[in-house]
Amino acid sequence: MLLLASSRSSGLRTFTRSCNCLARTRPHRLLHTAPPTAPPPPPAPVYASALAGLTSDLDKLAPRFDIDARQIRILKAPDDFYSVLKEKILNAKYRVFLSTLYIGASEHELIETLRQALQNQPGLRVSVLSDALRGTRESPRASCASLLAPLVEEFGEDRVEVRMYHSPILTGWRKKLIPARLNEGWGLQHMKLYGFDDEVILSGANLSTDYFTNRQDRYHMFSNKNITDYYARIQQTISQISYRVLPDKTSEQGYKLIWPASNPAPQPTERPREFKASASALLVPLLRPSQQPEDGNAGTESTDTVVYPLGQFTPLFHEVDTSTEIVGLSKVLQLLARQDFSEASWTFTAGYFNIHPTLKSILLASTSKQGSIITAHPHANGFFGSAGISGNLPPGYTLLAGRFLADVYAAGKQNSIILKEWKRGVVGEKDGWTYHAKGIWVNMPGEHNPSITLIGSSNYTRRSYSLDIEMNALVITRSEQMKEALREEVQNLESFTSPKKLKDFKEDVGWRVKFLVWLFEKQL
Image (cartoon, rainbow, N blue to C red):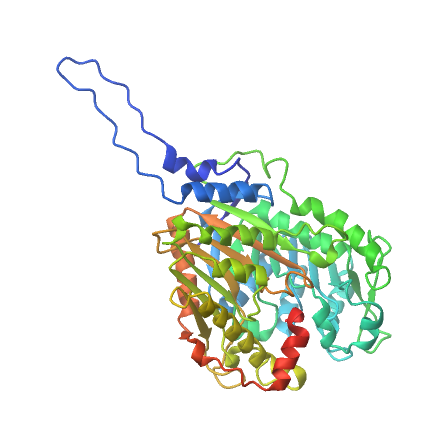
């Protein structure tokens, strides 16, 4: 299934045209013959005006791309994601851009795929953006940085650019005193954008073995040049204010991080306020709605889907936060509080469940008779069995899920909001999987298939909206084929879930877990 094209149209004109067009006929002047009458048009869906209002609001918030639903392909499994990723890299002619938290230290096959693509296509340029803390965590042992540095050495800085973002929040005494791995709690490059020529995959998956084999996530591939260009500009902008990785054979780790003089901002660790001021100036124009259509064409009947890129860059804004993700998502969820949306239904998922209070309040106010929350069972949490503090995370997230369910019961919504835990074996054991999917799907009143989804990197937590940088796409479609594909995506995730009642959650997780949740809740 595919879904993309990019031309901007005013309001919801092309979305509602099919509901509002009236057939007209010219009366025939024949004796004794009644003029033929056109069949009445189908009634507009009850939600048409609400959806028109939503897109009108979103048009004022973010760039808009009108596309054909056949330009979106939904992948369902980690191995599908990996196969398509390698295939697209090898077939790329002029660009590959990858934004990820990190590339796994053992991903030699992926690095070799990039090398082969560069050898096969002399005009190909590769750009990789990852996080400076997570991407160097294992140093001086093999790390994301040490894997990529040899590509820079072999093909040159003009063809291979490796950048690593560093949070402007982790500075001063925090930078000096907080140990590695724990310091990642103060902000990361969390976007997942995987682009090849004129196609881009948005996902929540990073680039390591578990994400290619047994960690469930989501993956939407958009086959459209204008949308791909937009996300490429997002990566390029963050790369401009990030460290550059260069090979360094004199060091044990085999690479060095430098701050190029051409970067339009000072280093985030040295002058964070000035860094954020420069970052704001670069990002604000990208996140705002385009003043002109992305191409010269207005919306047509063939564009049955709208895509709004929504980003969250809170740590990079100096004074006014003009991030668009939580604002745009809130506008979508507020539909569910309308009385005429009582027959709507929705599904919300986050593998690391610590829902932001604003989103929780909106969902609890929903009038919908059917809502589902999918989160990871402790045995499907990637930190299950970890040593040290991180081993407390699975019961910590379960504690937070139980508290959310208690709020559901307190609001009297236990019959309309169901919490489900995803489990497929036990992580660390044979055939054990972890769960990392995140997203939301909304079914319009009276419809069985979703018309709206949000796909991207965000976990919808306090952390996502204050510390990390995130990028997503809000997709609204009237294509029945696309709606069916979205329904199948939800069903695929739900096939490994079981519903939970409040009595299934107990707070006897121990004082240590409770204390750590209290202390680090904003970092979870």
